[in-house]
Image (cartoon, rainbow, N blue to C red; front, side, top):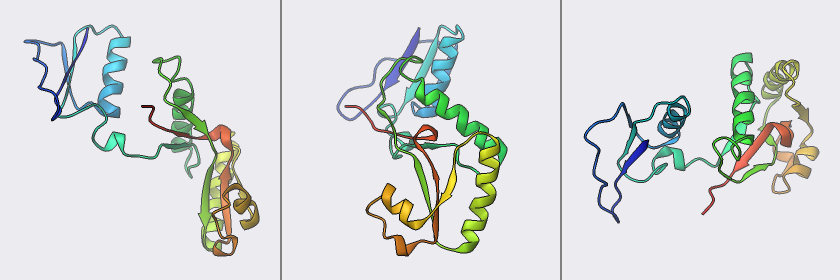
Length: 169
């Protein structure tokens, strides 16, 4: 059984069990993931201790961009695995977290940045990430709030390689 001992200002702490096979300190993304994977692996007595509510620390603050647009093969592969896991979240572990595929856009302000990103795009394309360098006008078409004269180019990866998730309430 996975136990959770949470405390918030609006509710008293749940009583802690006298023993547990595993105690995880922190109910954020890492602690929750560790508890999930332990339970999935058959560990029956896991205790997650959180000082407030789950994901109330830094885990609950990010906007939610998930990408494989990196410059080195290891981070690209990790990003690809992460994208696969996020897309499968409705079946494993079984929650709708509101994944929206929106693409990922890096705005480049100098020719030096363009050269750096062109190298990264080459590595990404070798690993089947469909990223590319696009013009300021094309970036403006993707993001109408962007002033095309303010950038030299952009690096873009379309919807299937970047997602944005929102917290469901």
